[in-house]
Length: 96
Image (cartoon, rainbow, N blue to C red; front, side, top):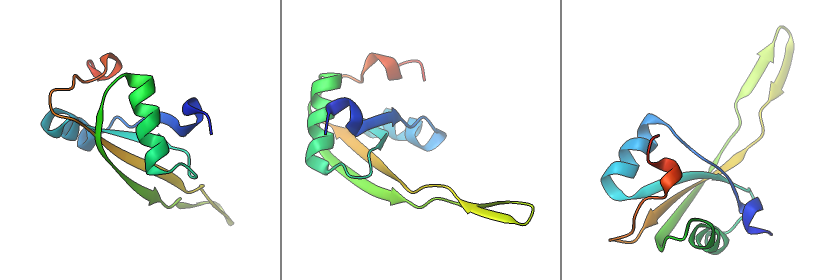
């Protein structure tokens, strides 16, 4: 799997903003088949930051309905990446 396929997008929410300021943790939406090792390598090479640890979780898609038709959003994977002490937060997350 390519490095750019592993990380889909950063997650910018109120909870992740508090985590980013307090403990140098960044949250990403990643590919469902990505492993912790692949996520760590992708972050280290793409963002040029050393990673301390990676935690992942599967987020199950919500059931949505429109009238009598019922559908389900797809499941996706979330990764919490904690940077090592002394590392600087990547520039694209500074203003968010």
